[in-house]
Length: 132
Image 1 (tube, one colour):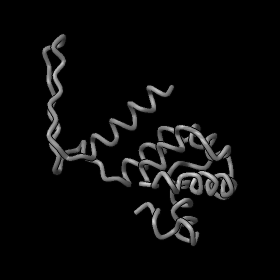
Image 2: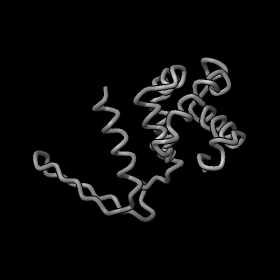
Image 3: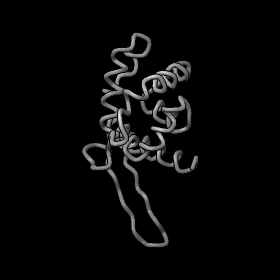
């Protein structure tokens, strides 16, 4: 599970770097190239965060309820939460859990929009951690 998270995070962050990448599979004889500017593979930081949340919503829900966990830590990384601020961010998501997830049908986009709104309103974290 940790390997999957690491792979997902590395892939998401790698796509955002904007460098040209050539991937070749010698066993299949095929290769693919992704360009950094204007390429379909390029994702902004908010897009990376949205995709990560969409793919890992249930794990994030569990980690946020507990106020800790590797998926919540990965989200903190995507949001550029400084290591010294992570305990406050983790506690914030735990304390705001019922606001972030008002019901079982809450989508990743809804959760992130609510998280952004709640962060903006928080005097400790708000100015530093908005999602845009």
